[in-house]
Image (cartoon, rainbow, N blue to C red; front, side):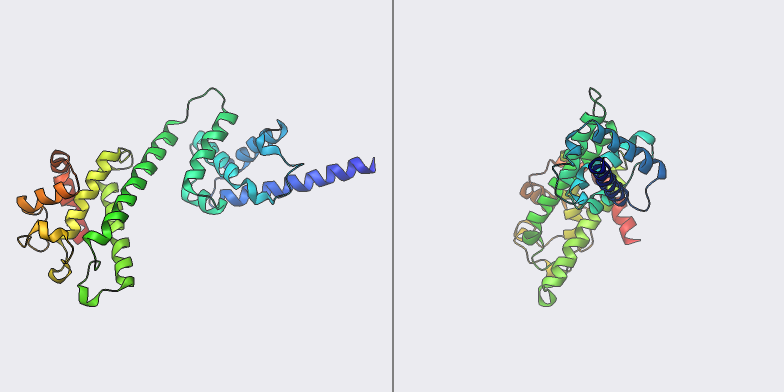
Length: 265
């Protein structure tokens, strides 16, 4: 009997530790309903001896369940109409966004077998993939297009280059929100062509002594400072260099011009 009581006591401590970890992953701003019903979902998985429930053989800390806990919290929030921000869940769980999406799909199959993936999750994943592709392309192009960042070569250093890179990416994210809104921006081609527009905007606003990249041999010297869009010949050269479809660019012109005005305001 004493042995049984000891086992029950140990299990109760493990459950308490796991619950505290689940609450921590949800974060201070999480809805109480999400925390309560999310933990109930976790308990249900544990009682089913699901993959989440390898307590007896698991010598790892409760933090090892972070990805699953983040997934359950996210799915619970979606179901209740009180979504928990992904950025908070990922940070608190100490996982990558890629791992988060994989875990969400896995836990959805366990919690709601036979049901399709939620539309909100599908859209979020599309947005993430499109933004990831855009970042990789921007990261690849930056050193070639902006070798001294957004300042003249005489005053450029690693810090100004890094700051310029972050500033340019922030400008793209602002443009993405303003042009596509909350429901758009999941199409990779649309997002890439918006990136090309923002790159054109950034290039056209470079100081003259910062126009040292090889791209300027194609653009020529006839690009007025702070002039978007660029003159047609320079623009055609840029689109060819970045393998962009001019028709897609032209459809974005008026929206990007408004973004430029808003950023300058």
